[in-house]
Amino acid sequence: MGAIPSESIEQIAAANDIVEVIGSYFPLKRAGANFKALCPFHQEKTPSFHVSPQRQTFHCFGCGVGGSVFRFVMDYEHIDFPSAVRKLAARVGIPVIEERGPSGAEDRQVEARRVLLQLHGEAAAWFHENLIKRELAEPARKYLKQRGITAEIAKRWQVGYAPDEWDAFGSWARGRGYDVRDLISSGLIKSKDDADGMPSQKSYDRFRGRIMFPICNDVGEVIAFSGRMLQNEAEGAKYLNSPETPLFRKGSVLFGLNKTKRALIEANCAIVCEGQLDLIRAVSRGSASERFDCACC
Ligand SMILES: [Zn+2]
Image 1 (cartoon, rainbow, N blue to C red):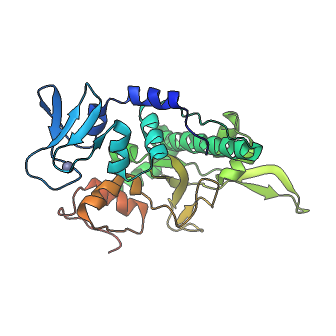
Image 2 (image 1 turned 180 degrees about the vertical axis):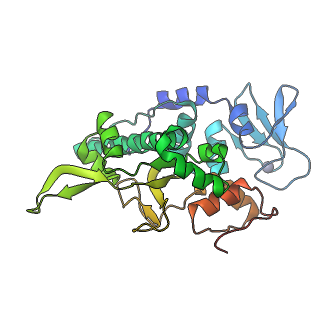
Image 3 (image 1 turned 90 degrees about the horizontal axis):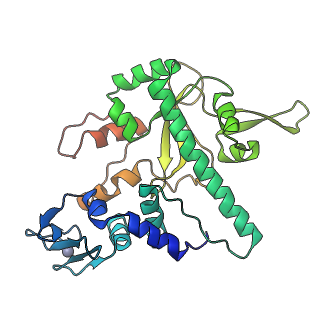
């Protein structure tokens, strides 16, 4: 990865008001010119965690933590500086252009990664739109409703639907200008070999007739998908995941961790579910003290 230019970092800081950012994690109370809350970094009964909109900083008089909006996101999310920058950039829709390294190979890698990330983000939006708007997704909508997934929950998790066709996704993606080689490297389409074994430009969609769950990295970028078969009686695996790609290494990502990490840290305990729907339902039902019927445990 290249370095993020300092002008971009300044622009991202300017666009992310610290009160709004911290206020999106937990409620802040106005106290004169500042805001305060119970400190998330140590146990306390009276609030000593202060946020200053003028200085765009936070400071805890109890445990001494403090700094800029980037520091807060790094400490709260347990992520490194570049990840915090990318996360805050994504929050306000600023593209992060990383400075090119000296080597051409590195340039190509960075560029390939950028294309794959963009493709995954757009694909997740397309699958979601299929689920919400298109006639062909009616059985998927019915199934999700049965499983307790409302439209609002589907939106929050960007649940989608891949049409039961061989080239629905591929033709959409080519129409958006994506190169077939990039599509194959994303794992979202597969190449079809000719009879003589030579690879050709022919390809087909990996995910067909499946409910699509975007798998995100720590900063919430879509890096892969898991597709659940809609018809239980049909042939094939019930769950199908993206293959390993330059973005996705199996075994190093847990579905939903980007949305649940903070709660896990606070509770110092985790419940692992087998299926994506089990996890989404558990998280949607709220705290562990609420009753939850899990299909797997
Ligand atoms: Zn503190």
